[in-house]
Image (tube, rainbow, N blue to C red; front, side, top):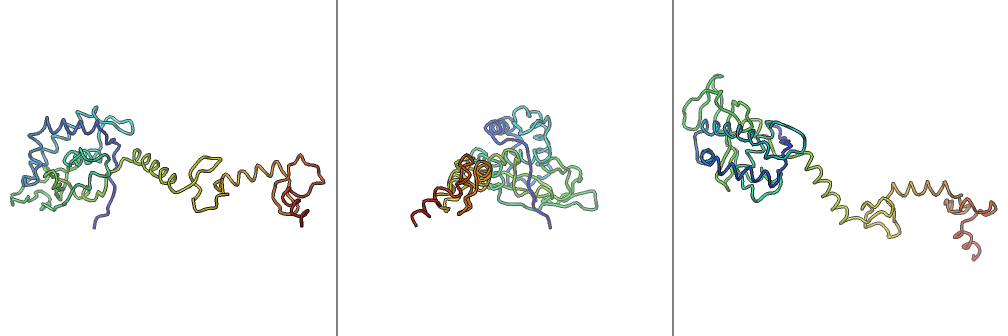
Length: 255
């Protein structure tokens, strides 16, 4: 039983990356023909992936990253290949990429530590099989996209990837989405200006809890306690004989 995990990449999914994918489809169209979903030559597909690994590294200047780097990691390669073989024109983030894949198929396994058997029944040296991330693999799977009629050769680790995530970009995106959600469901605090006051609370609640506590502390530093209601609402500049706040004073005076 494999545990599911995220594929963390620092590649930014943007128009620059889409242009690299377009260039790859144009300049390496002969290689991409081997990625067709009906291709049974797993070794050939694996070798084609290796060729494109080098192509991506040579074109690293056409990739934007969310951190400083001069090389591509295995999670980066997995993300690039997945983005390359899906309908990348119709998506705007890494999160949408894996959703386009339809099937994961077990193809072959290592036999006696030296060979694998592909779907045609032929034996192949095990060291010739590599996942699209670049890792040498024992067990071979294919990841297929029916929409584009293309597939990838992957190993037993990459089949556990449930989503592709850029932790820096997605964190900013999640924060922005959270902010928009707060604006829609909450009122704005008059002090910190954040939308954190639940709209279900009474209209007289103008401050969030943190700002209210800070406000009360400030008031207590500049005021004395009322002898009746106990609130810090008697200005310290008032004469010492004034023991009640205005509200309590007028309430007692009229009753």
